[in-house]
Image 1: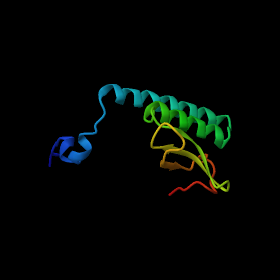
Image 2: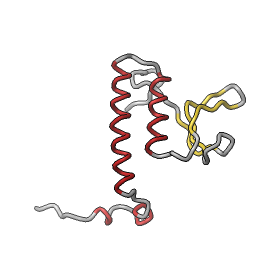
Image 3: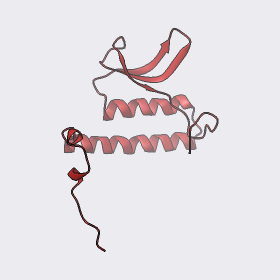
Image 4: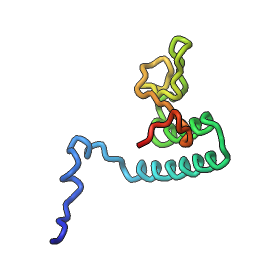
Amino acid sequence: MQPKRQKYTEYISKGLIKFAPDEESFNNFCSQLKVFIEKVNSSIQANQTEENLKSHLEHFLKDAFYTNKAIETKSYKGQIQADLVIYQENKNDSPVEVLIEAKKPDNKTEMVFL
């Protein structure tokens, strides 16, 4: 039995296809991801803090996806703090779009794993 070759467009929703990145954006993502992975691996080997790893994630997100949006730590009523939030606009008083809780990969007590 021979596998049947099909186009990727047969599996991906037409709504998603219209958001496909152009080649320049895709290449930028690939290069930023490579830099991010290298920095994270280096930080892990040097036993850096979670804050250090979080800063690498923030730079990756800004450089690869969110060049026109604010990304920073946010405190809620002084009690609970989100590691990173991505705002809808490039100002920190706009509504929050994404909450990120960053953990060190070796933090087995707080890291979710299967």
